[in-house]
Image (cartoon, rainbow, N blue to C red; front, side):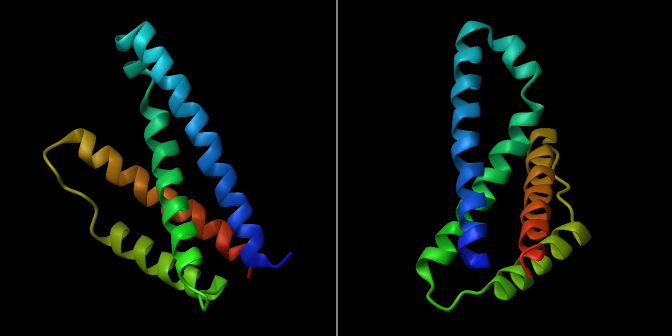
Length: 116
């Protein structure tokens, strides 16, 4: 199995695992919304990671010429740009989300670099 296929497999696992966690969160939310929300911080990171994994999977599916190197270059630029210019919204939740997205991109970049 080539490295691009290995990456796709790893990213699909992230997406599926996150879907399960979101379903569990929904159940917890129905049982006790306050408690579920108090402990939802980790869900931001999981959903952001899944979202970014889906973006990469979609890009791979759309392109016949996308390589691990091109994915790494794109993610490096994204991570550096977002780290240099972090979100400064007056909404703490928005800032938390943007922080989670940046972290997710860095985690996926780490996986991609491990495939080079």
